[in-house]
Image (cartoon, helix red, strand yellow):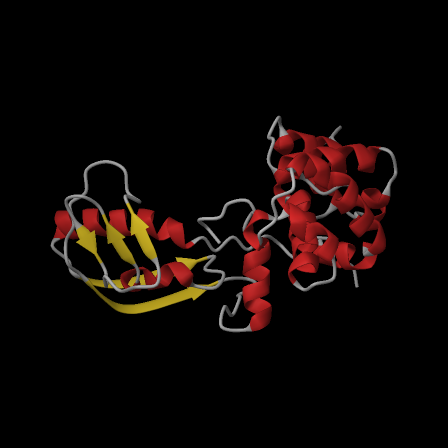
Length: 236
């Protein structure tokens, strides 16, 4: 089966995957910055990165092949198949400098080429609960402007649907708060600027996604975790 996410006609003319990797890496000195620069050089040199990316040579930037690859690599770390990388992943307690990670990553890619290649068929699923702060601010404005306090939430691209649960999260600032104070998800000063908090009730909620994720399963949690950058500890 051809699992390539895009047709060749969608290719950004004149650009290679190495160009895509470099463009997002920029001068970032975090783990993924070093990794993407290493991936770019390795792809151009015909190394294991290029072998793992076979069939995706003409994928456009929007396919985010680099993040699919890095998430696949992270899943190998999370499932214990690449223990040599743990020391570079802060969310797992790693403290080794990110600048030293790429040679080890390259070895893991070379040893798990088929797994990494399969990971490229999985589109990024960044179901970030922090984004619910923007949704809450919008609902506050809607309530203030309309007086409507019974809300139905319908979300496109819901992934695991975590942002549909915003009324179960706790948001707080100096002058206002929202949600149950004992929630396991706490946001402090998540909304910048003036806020007009208003009470409302979510009467119904539903979401859809081409590839929905069940966050209550081990596989679902693994997938979602793998797309959270490992050095962003607050998100983890």
